[in-house]
Image (cartoon, rainbow, N blue to C red):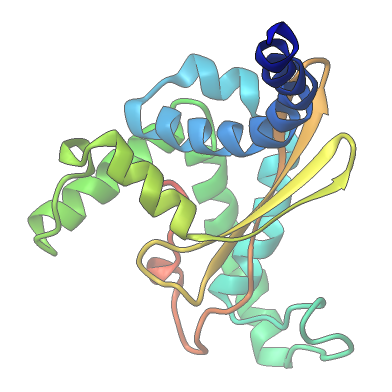
Length: 205
């Protein structure tokens, strides 16, 4: 009888560490979004490798904003001279946007701007009024792909909350005993002709 009681606990002790290892990076991705929503700059400062995130986001945001070909989905396709010119001229605006808002304080500020716009202009509910369980369900439903690239690298791909054809891809790396966001990309699926004004940084996604 004692063995029957102890066995489930023993199995749980064996399975718990690998289960926690698998769940931890996904929880980190969720917690990062919640930190942006709540304005927890200290958490964002600690959990994001800012130089590499800015650089990878800069590349993909420029490509999406100016309709440049994606080397992953369109290998060998060269952008036209006009597209290269637009990217060259508009690159400064992208750099300014990233340098200003892709910071521990800037991302929550941008999120707040987007919430005000969606509430006052589009008539959408303020996310602060949405219960946490509903936010978690919505976050889980938008996960397109989540996979370990190695024992210390985890990649998650999320569909945009308002534009499902646009995806945000984050690469998290295990640093010490915690996962940190190392790279952030926007998948090049924006429709041709869209302007920089319609390209939204992934803060309210």
